[in-house]
Amino acid sequence: MTSTTATQETSQTPVSYQADPEQSLSEAVLEAVAAATGVDELELADEFGPLYYAVDPSALDSLFHDRCGTDRAVGSVTFEYAGFLVSVDRTGQVTLTS
Image 1 (cartoon, rainbow, N blue to C red):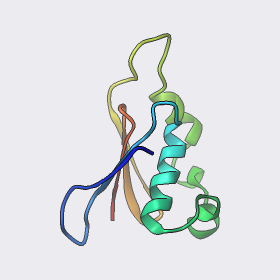
Image 2 (image 1 turned 180 degrees about the horizontal axis):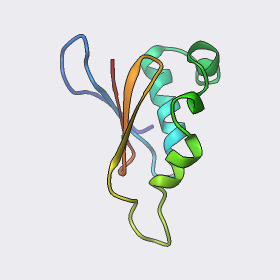
Image 3 (image 1 turned 60 degrees about the vertical axis):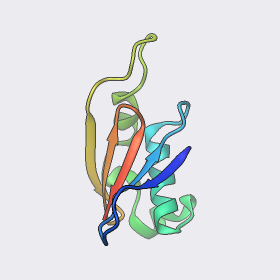
Image 4 (image 1 turned 30 degrees about the vertical axis):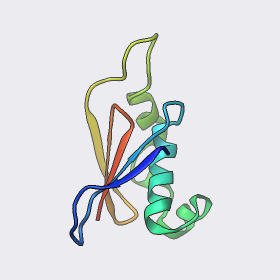
């Protein structure tokens, strides 16, 4: 993960994370949630359930995966996980809103 940015100053502050270019989006989501909750990435499934209960990680990764040198598909995906509304866009931006 390359950056962490709080975008508002409220109790429901969205927190944004930028995935590394070579990082899968499902890994970026797990890293973002781990950083936001203080729970080790390897313990997230024990604490909040596996990510695949909220979204299919393979589908998430392939949806925005570069294809034959073209840019990632356009759009974003939003789902609930670990008490957050998680939004992931084509640029690798992961936003967590509590």
